[in-house]
Length: 152
Image 1 (cartoon, rainbow, N blue to C red):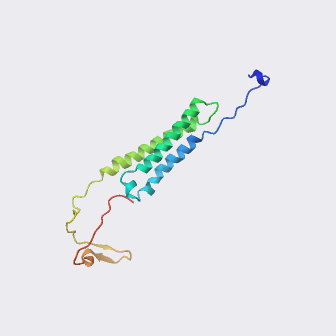
Image 2 (cartoon, one colour):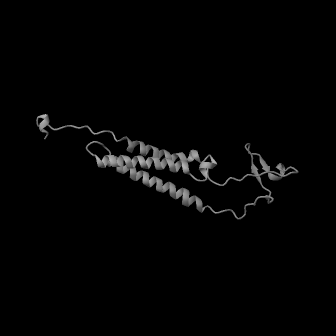
Image 3 (cartoon, helix red, strand yellow):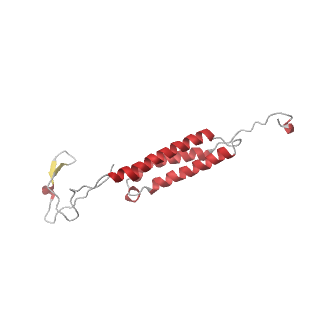
């Protein structure tokens, strides 16, 4: 009871705890941004941009949790903040496992030609479905073959 208000109860509306919601959105955006950032070698070889997004999302979630648990009478988000933080941690663990462990387990091809070595003859379909052989493309000076390792 509050005697200053004539014995009535103070109805203090709690504020929206925006760092929790924004942090969760940024972290989810970080997870789905890797497909975009994988198009560029500077962010494909080491996913630093995705890790930065995860980090910003985690910092915002932690700030929001401190607000929710530190001043619960003023800020909302104890339950949602805890759930979002757990989901973000699990998604980051999944991302880190896939990027830093699973993709590193892809073995190098022992049969792949080395730089400067002559490639074996092969044929593949072109964009129209017509078979094209490597020997058909060779000029007197040779041909340049580019092999991409990875996933699309």
